[in-house]
Length: 168
Image 1 (cartoon, rainbow, N blue to C red):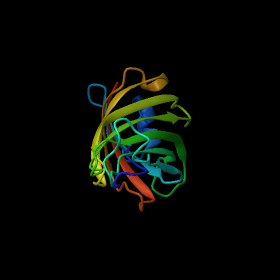
Image 2: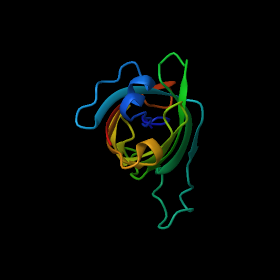
Image 3: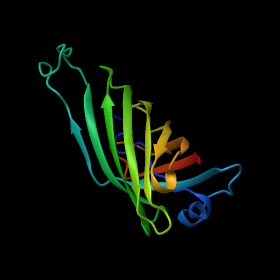
Image 4: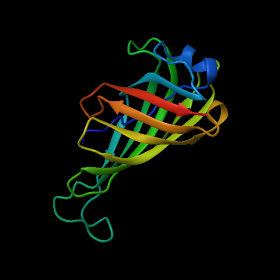
């Protein structure tokens, strides 16, 4: 399951807040911001149902499962400033484990950034990179839309790089 802990999200946004949250933030254009944050693998739980626990019964050897991820989000790769916490649910929906649905949120707690950013999308669970849609948010992220590109995700990965393309 390539995407594992990751997957994907973490964001910091809003006007001057984006520049303060990440040294690699770009200047806003028409309310759009692009910046990079990092998720560090701390906790992931893989739940695999038995073949008779699902309806209809799963095929023998099925890899259908769900994963819960709860990881801190940092402004830099060096773990120096935690700016939030991500919580994701990744549901593997194909028997070969290649297709998954990701739903999640990041709660931001950095000074000047408050609120939650939500994401969801279909991902290739065997790939360590991809993208999911930003579906909304609260607080500083109210009405947010955009996309999160992620790379470095996976069960053996300790850090996922998240490039946020955000419009508020």
